[in-house]
Length: 422
Image (cartoon, rainbow, N blue to C red; front, side, top):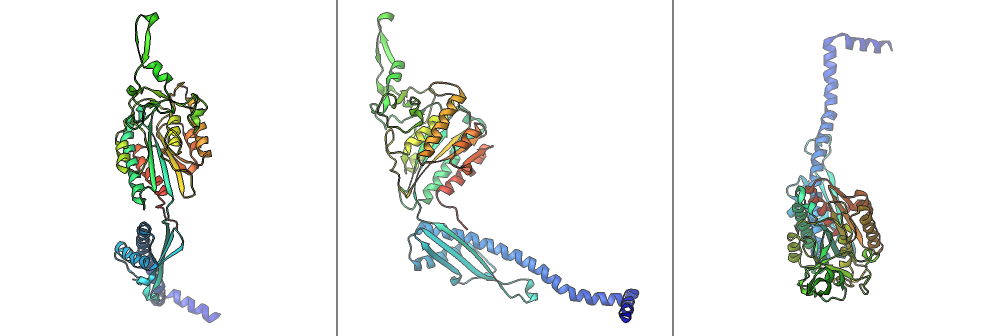
């Protein structure tokens, strides 16, 4: 023990001895220090390469999904071609055998890419290479989709550039859905512009449809002759109707009941404000885009009627008959977007009264197995819309109209099954 203390005392007492010993210790310690720094740098570089591989693999999965069905040989060949075209320059050595593509079940593709990263700095520690792997999977057997867009066209949509942003976002959504479609007809969309009322295209629908109720319209649109007490009043020709429709009688306004009686029919009305006509379910992407372009803001807000007609467009009975019957491989959704509180319907301007009809419609739509996305743009009853959505994650509160594009893109990606599960 005494000799050890003497040695330590000499080490710390002499600058030459201390300097020499420190140099030796530092020389010994510098190797793991450099190795540690090198490992950190190499890890960062390897992670960057891994990110590039992941993006390339995701792109490969999506591209293959659009080409399915393919044989295993075709998957291997085309998968490698697509992957190498997307991956760019890597510091990862990866042979074609490093890309493994499997189809564990019908409608699903799984991909794994594995390579060897050669350390650029930490090789001094004896590490010659380490594996870098990424994986992904994608659904290609997409269910058929019927989607109704209930879009607020009220006067307040003219503020803060909301209508311009809505048109851009809705058209981006259409593009996403169109590009995801493997077969024509797999995806169909209806567009329901609304304010206080909704409007039909009178060039498509005849004026004697059995589901229309004309009494109110004829009372308000007639030509009278003679003295006041002996006037003879004749309703105007129904061909002069401009296509607007009011709420049905309660409680049928919140239902999809067949319009077979006076109470269940849809009351025709001359439009209170300008309004783009509804477009029933279709996969005519040009017509859908044109309908969006034709929308203009005007009038007061009745969210209930927009949601009701979105629902009608997804069922096969009158008034619209384009929808398919429910099936295991068919999904039905509504996207309801509004920028304000309810202000006017057929009977009242009481927001709370109209809200009750909206809530009743939301409940009925969801009970029918149709899922609802709701979007509130700056203004509107957040609680009403949040509760209307099928799930809290399906409610979006947009504080700036420019956010509409990202919201619609997010919904579109989900509906098109373009999201990748890791």
